[in-house]
Image 1 (cartoon, rainbow, N blue to C red):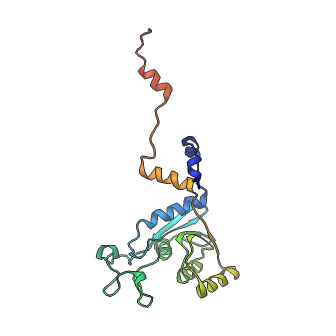
Image 2 (image 1 turned 60 degrees about the vertical axis):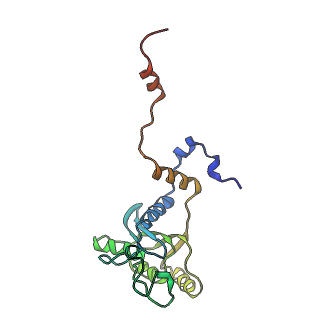
Length: 202
């Protein structure tokens, strides 16, 4: 199957702009790159009126040693996902984003949150209590009883959830922006020809 991006010319790619959802999801994905969790990276961005209020990523509490530095969660637990019983010491990305907003006195009432992973029930309850009304996520997480509780919150009108993705074309453009200098002035062919002209006619 031919990938869509293969049919996009360089000129068309330059004119491509991400949707607002893609834009904020990409910011959440960038935040996830700061994750210090050994299980998997998660990033979040709280947004209101198309402005970013706070970002967060999953990792150990501020001031404590990072799991990625010591190579384990804590003695006896190699990684957060290694045990269904032992607790994790990681703070989730959504909780960290909400904590950052609170720490700096930023109200989150009526805001939206973009996350790379669907919030767990604990984070979803925190999101609702923080007045955030919309959740946009990339990867599904909840199932079974957790999904039923989540759906009850949605049915009660407490929050809305929507799964979103970044298009391949926008992802390709984002990769090119990250891997190469972004703001490079391209030479003007007219000026180049003018600069190469010696001033002598044949």
